[in-house]
Length: 458
Image (cartoon, rainbow, N blue to C red):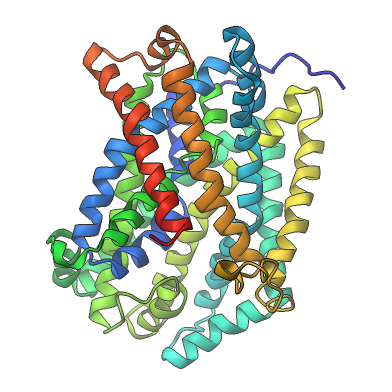
């Protein structure tokens, strides 16, 4: 089938766009990953370095993605085709468009599994499963969830079904309506949970840990993890912001919108830390617990605190909600492209959703029936990686940095200065010069460090 003219999909308001874009960024990276990485890397010093990378590297890249999307005005692939054709650029740059639909789709297959953990824990918390639980009990509870293919498959299936339902309803009646309802609720819930945690937990220790820098506790590896977290948390390189940027009206000021996204994303991460660390310190939990901090350590605190069942239920509902707003952004890019080609949105949503669900079942199985299957056993650095870890590593450490690098190079070196400057709309020439310097030079350097440290273990 030959491509049809791109459809005129536009956000109904600037508020709708901003909420949706924040929903892309705010997800598991803020509430699950940020606290445990902060705990492993010394607290406040890590937070300050992370915030610096967000401002210097993350903010300019978000502007670049939004500018490319709005300049193209269609799905990621169609946008890149238009820009490449209009500018007479090499077809090589079409990789950005393809990566912008392939990366989020692959990510959805395993991201949905972790979302399923949060969804399952909502019901465990509500049932009082954490009451009086100890380390062994909490470890066994999480282990039982992971070892059960059918439990994980149930939550994964429900998550995918909800995503398909939202995306199939279209931009205004589905995606936009969902973020207009969910994002304000997420912020209200997080503020309430944070206030409760600060009141009932050890607020002083948590605030000291998060806001009193001790750079002696931060290693070079920790600095690189802060840089990687900035990319991961802001969903840089995923490509969803290119698609969302295409739906943006011309009167939206991209630098202001990008600043709002960054402030909201960083604010959620800090609030998550202020929600989790008071409980960690109050109940003697290990701050460097790692990925198990949320699903193993926190249930112990929930089981001991007053009103723990209610707090735990609300917390995991918050975690799932944050993951869900990011998940719908992972399915939208490929559906938008198929819709641009003249296909029915509902049918394509079901078809692509079914494919993501099926591959996701393999990710589910990697924790139980396929846990001993190591697809890269022949390659020593990844010999013990299961399917889930292979997919996560491929997306996080290779595909995201690579696509982010291409986006930076295309926006700052390939697109005409006039085109990109018109899209960004800086009120002062110095603003554009700073953006251009960051995206041209600092971003490639930062990505080089990420690849070196995470791929080669520097």
